[in-house]
Figure 1: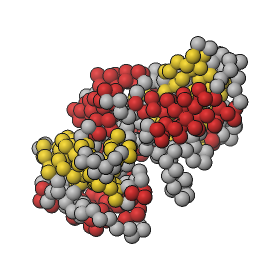
Figure 2 (figure 1 turned 135 degrees about the vertical axis):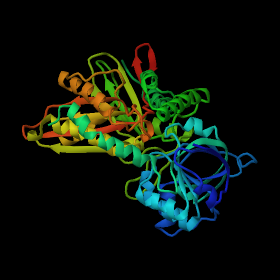
Figure 3 (figure 1 turned 135 degrees about the horizontal axis):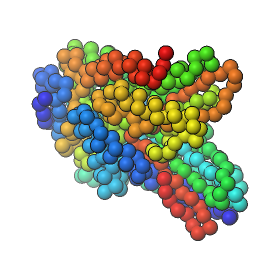
Figure 4 (figure 1 turned 90 degrees about the horizontal axis):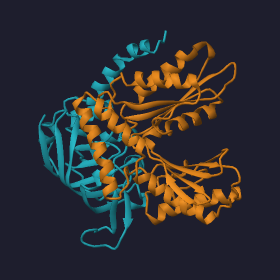
Length: 202
Length: 290
């Protein structure tokens, strides 16, 4: 169990060195992705001007306030509450996110499944678990919204955050096929029969 | 007691924001209880982060979770409460829109076919406003921002009478397994038993959003609550689905009579950010609570 501090972007080698149960803290850029912007990018053929190669993308759609553009709020958006959404809905986008946009790290909650695990192994990626529902804390790790693209989809725009001390995040899926979710799910399902017996189910 | 719609609008606005920021005391107690008994090291850390988040939200006056949810308003009208029903509904809706624009809050509500977001947290049929009547002399409005992580894990099974209570128990256990970490556990697992299909699902929602420590009024339902709470916490799903003892704060059951040929069971879950806020209109003024 090693702790890694990543100044974004990172290399394939850095990501492949991650193992399940390691922890990671991010510094610098972090991209916010979501249902609508990934549908736009990967189903509807829209393009982004962002260079996401070697970067981390978090499953989010933040609460923001429109403000005057300034050095601290260069996009005219002030982050109010930035949190994380359930990843499983966006399972099928992991691969194109990595293949087409070069993303290396996916951050989310609740885990991803088999296709993502394969993409992480083949292309060199990992899934970092954040604690869902702890957005007030997460927001204190976000310095600013540095840029925004596909903003007609607001709040499901493609966001670029500047983060400081973003973590620790738990490596829950690595590039060697390791997945904490698989382990927990296997164990839990193996207990099902016993649990039902205790409930007197015949 | 005559109620001014303008005041209802203000209260509906205030309730949405309060619910997003202040976790009810029974949920905080629930966290303490789980943290005291959790044996898994990762789960302890996860619970610790959740507890820290509650204080950060209070200190920074921020929302607990980014998900502003689907706004739900539950209205209980007591004896002698006077207000035009339609004005009450309109006032609540206006309050919900204003909270969204004025705070501002992320509008998490879109048209289901066009997916268009009006940035008001409102749309056709949303917010749902449920109206009940009571024997006391107050008007109570409760607001629940229902997060989608937990709401996306909702199930209904029209089991057969021949399947008995075993079908209900098995269904609840299987739903908890299926949900895994997607619902942001530890959850309140709401179980609706009986009724029609739609009533069964709404009972599950009522159960999921009931305060911790409350008990099903039906004694058979209450018995099941205890059994199922213990059972689902032997599965080891744990907080965030990362393993541990703390899978659910509790399983809550709500019951309605059903047809001789039917045995419906529904499950709806509430995430660990089990947010709710309420306001009581009394002759002395408005009292806020949970």
